[in-house]
Length: 144
Image (cartoon, rainbow, N blue to C red):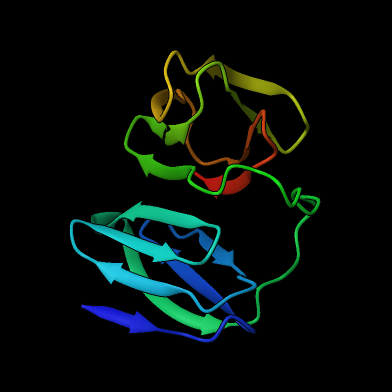
């Protein structure tokens, strides 16, 4: 099933752990539902394990402290949250991905060893808010 939504308001996900995650897009996002819930926009793809999502709704997304991304970044990077942490794909060879907590402390980091590479970044702690950032400037805020 594919749904089209306007990008002016945000898409909010209520997860089964009780947290709410919101995404605001500059373009019109598309939602694809299958084993994962995937929200795609022109330059961004967000993916959650469908079993972790309790409810999807549209509403006002509160701004966060992540600064605007650069215009010339790799827009093919895809972030996926899984039971063990974060999966990041579409990376350039040598591109670093770092995950920080809300205090700015580095939680984990890894470097892609191939073009269009995929990294699995394990996160031992759950129940926190994290910010993943690629070396090319793509940022992704998520809860786990």
